[in-house]
Image (cartoon, rainbow, N blue to C red; front, side, top):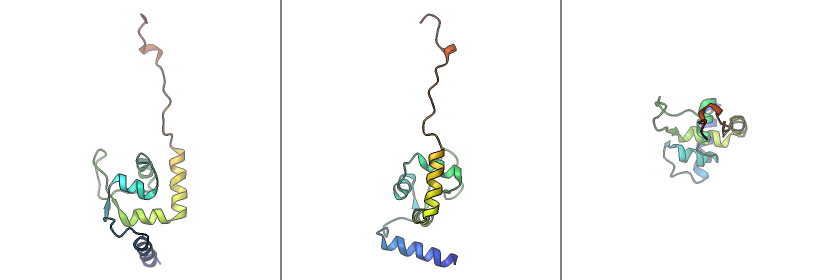
Length: 106
């Protein structure tokens, strides 16, 4: 079953015009392929929905396997869960004014 799923994912990718896609994708290409913002890649990585290749340091460039990215892009349940994880994460933190930080002269 698993081998047939991988074959069908690769066949779908080949038929959908991704033949020129490299095996390793950078963050921008991965986000474009999934139809999400580049900033949402970190959310998916934290949720365990998307795993970078190797064991990169937190500040290192991340690379993703094209096959796994295509598998996630073609899996409706996986996209549903990924979208829920992105929606749960606040994109902006509220701005707080610290009253103690303002000098008394002002």
